[in-house]
Length: 273
Figure 1 (cartoon, rainbow, N blue to C red):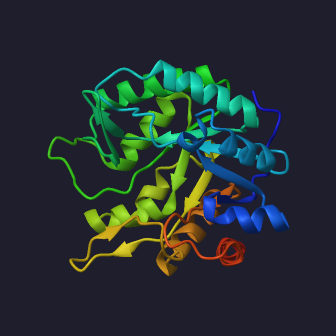
Figure 2 (cartoon, rainbow, N blue to C red):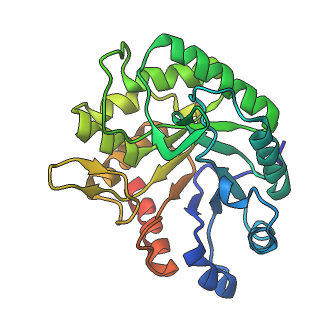
């Protein structure tokens, strides 16, 4: 179990290579950083050294994209061993990944793919998430997806499915507010109804990010724009309903200079007010 903790009102940033020059020169005031787990699972010295320098000064949490929680195959023991070692090395307060599948039959699709929302998959996801959390020895958070297709087989809403997995696994929500908004616009549901299904006492952190509107009106979770006004409004409602909670900004493409990203993150304080 990590000895570190993150204040419930902390503001964090998803750490990306574009940030390194400014970060290592200025060491700005940031509540914590989140790193993509898979970028640091190997033994290459430069990534390990950079991560060690960051984790010596800031709390670092791990955010995975390769667990394949709802994949066809069993969970990968070698992957989990590496993830546990990385979490121990940075003394991560918590670890998160996605409620999705990412590959099947030995093929990785390098994408976060949805499933039908049915009770039997609640049972599968909850059992696997419980095992992951027990193996990590620290809280494990499950993130909701942005999605672009629905399944006729679904017999549950996304939010009821998500809440059931968290409840039955004993794990935690890693709640992405931008993903809620993106999916609500793509599938035509009320994002406030989604928020009402969340037990905020079980929220490890909330993600914010920008999205892109395609010519056909589809919203895509691109993480390459500032947070939209609609997502800030939804975040404000989440804070009113369940705050405080740690809040993290993701910016993955067309990343502006780090001071601009930090200024975008600071807008969360105004949204809370």
